[in-house]
Length: 504
Image (cartoon, rainbow, N blue to C red; front, side, top):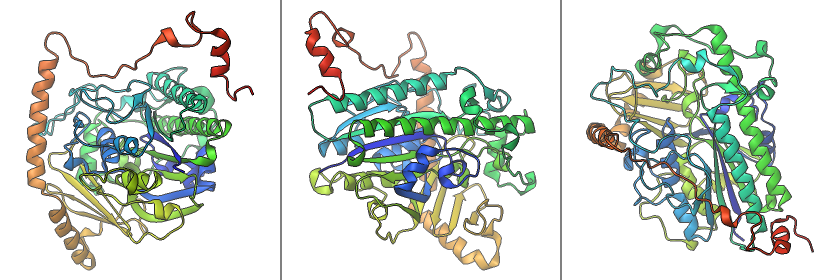
């Protein structure tokens, strides 16, 4: 029997800041419970350290540069199949509650239905400008306001959004249980927390003693790599700056909001149990990327360093064993993995373009995975040339045509403070990685594609903002005339139909 699939995504959550990945302070009981009965992947990476491209790559199983997902204002073409298309062909009902940052007129991309709108705009307004790489992005871009305003609040737009996402997902799970349709379901639930701004409700803030909040280690500025320096300048960390008190507030709120997202994971697990679906549902918890959270004096994402590029990845459900998987892997592996979860490749056509990743099902079910590598790309803000990363075994290599090479031993040096690329004993390994990058990616050609796309999208956005604005933002459909109890219904049937468990 095909299992149901529940994919729960946080936003900007680094595994380093979760109890499930052994942080001594952060409380994540739902993730902990998932780890106890499932597989925890200890070296999972995003395919791109920015929201939209990472999600596009995960859904399509293809690298961001292969599908034109250059940045957060790139359109995902309707002609590219996604995980939702594949699972529909395999017999699944597919639904999305929450954000996936789709840009363009197609706001479904294979999902049968969306239960909410997105938190961010679906147009081309957020297009970077590599023609002027030294200029800071417009008013919508990250800055130190996220730290200066960090703290507590009773409501924010992010809280409003996640409450809607969670409510809609819970309602949908009950609707599935009440439905006579016995097909398996794929439900993606994507929250926006703990993404900045770092503001938490008091009940989550009060889980933590403010004085216990650990502070990041910030090495001397002269020791930083050029891209980290660009990030610090771009987010105004080196101009507006921040105080130690603001750092503590931001990290405190981040931890609180991580516990908040974890509570929604726990709620969804409880509903699965209440509806009798827990034992036949594969549950996956992950994020689109991490957050530097002050390490190196950098914040947010956009970096290949561990706290930005690593993601939590936990799987539990039928046939999955309790284990820790050390192999490097990626969200690019999600498509082949879930095709295996859905019952193998015989239930639907093979992808026209083979997925770039590999199936992690063997690892999750206790088998051996001979592959230990992941790749990552970046072509957005605070850069002027494409950037690439290869993680293989204990080493991570970072390449950009305009920057010196970086090579780290992430096992011996988890904070990535010692760049081995300049060491004589690592000269050959560095050269081998550089050769591999040149073989995998045509950096010059990609840069020309990025520049052409940015110029076109800036023109289109200017046109769309002239006169009556054109909106692609998704508006969920709702037919209130057939909800709850209406006069054209038999009231004696409406109550029992929506009751769960049903009366016998």
